Amino acid sequence: MSFIQLNGITKFFTRTLKPAVDNLSLHIEKGEIITLLGPSGCGKTTTLRMLAGFEQPSTGTIQVGDEVVFKDGRSLPPEKRGIGMVFQDYALFPHLTIEKNVMFGLNKWSTKQKKERVREVLELVGLSEFNKRYPSELSGGQQQRVALARALAPRPHVILMDEPFSNLDAGLREKMRYEVTAILRKADTTAIIVTHDQKDAFAVSDRVVVMNEGIIQQIASPKEMYRCPKNCFVAQFVGKTNLLSGTLCPDLKHVETNIGRVCLPSALTESMDNVMVSIRPEGCRLSEKGRYVGTVERVTYTGEYQEVTVRLNGDLTVEPMVIYASIEQDVEVGSVISFDITPELVALVD
Ligand SMILES: Nc1ncnc2c1ncn2[C@@H]1O[C@H](COP(=O)(O)OP(=O)(O)O)[C@@H](O)[C@H]1O
Ligand SMILES: [Mg+2]
Image (cartoon, rainbow, N blue to C red; front, side, top):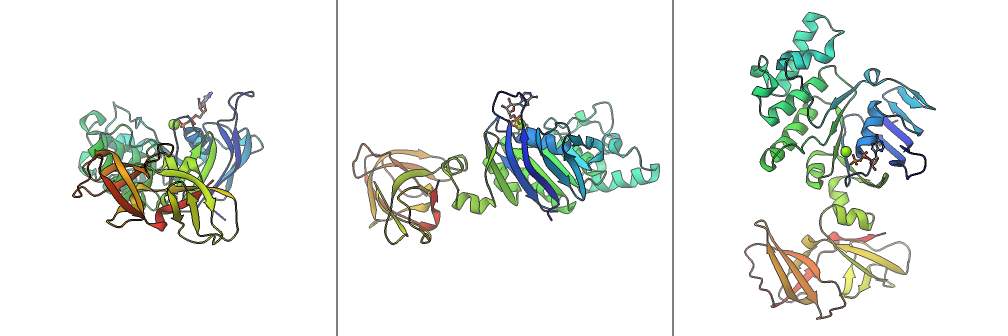
């Protein structure tokens, strides 16, 4: 049985409108780091708050460890659920030292135990020397580590983090992705992280849960999510993609589209008529005698690669394709190029 189970959770804030969370079921294993990823307003925070006990589901059950924490309107209060929450703004007490901030959740412990545990978690987050400082004397990244230390101190079953990276600038953000995951792994804890940023989600988690309009769209590892998005929403929300409609060939392995025949990573087991394929720009490789030929309409240089917009077969009724070229390749607007498509980065989507 999974360590954390949310079963059939629906949350209505108002009876008449659509639910904020719609029949959500999610099982999480001990030690897993999971992210809830989706656009603003899709129900990520509400899901986290229901798990923490700050919000009550309209229907459904929640189990944490061996304990049913919500069922039939009966709800275990947040402080009894064994959950550590890291808030988006860290919510540190400005008038307390780092040490006292971390000690805050340990009021039932003996003084000796408290001191020992605070020393332990501050060491875990690499802030042992900062124990007598005040939050205002720390950088944003350090404050976040204090907030994480405070949440970890009472040894909760699970750590919840709502948009932990959104207050950090680009460079620090990347660094904190690695630091936060390293700390969570070292603490051997289960964690659920909410983010609207695909890069955050992919960098920190074992599995990603993509949500839209309160509904789970797909649950998968970052690699599987990128290579095999289940539907058009996931394909477009997670990275860039080209979506083409077409018909499945009798061999069940190729799709006839308006740019020509496209090969799937493996043959399907049953036939269907009209299908939709997602082709990742990374799956298109420039090649002198490539199968697909087109005219370059636009080149955007990102520094890491060039994003090339190509109009195939001169057909203005067909959406141009976006493909990536490496930065040392010469790609000029107006020139004719050809490319091949790697089947592994092609996926059939709903
Ligand atoms: N306390 C509330 N009262 C009424 N509606 C709410 C409340 N909290 C959230 N909502 C609504 O529920 C939906 C999901 O919100 P939220 O879970 O905060 O989304 P996310 O965290 O994914 O941005 C939104 O439409 C939001 O307006
Ligand atoms: Mg939110």
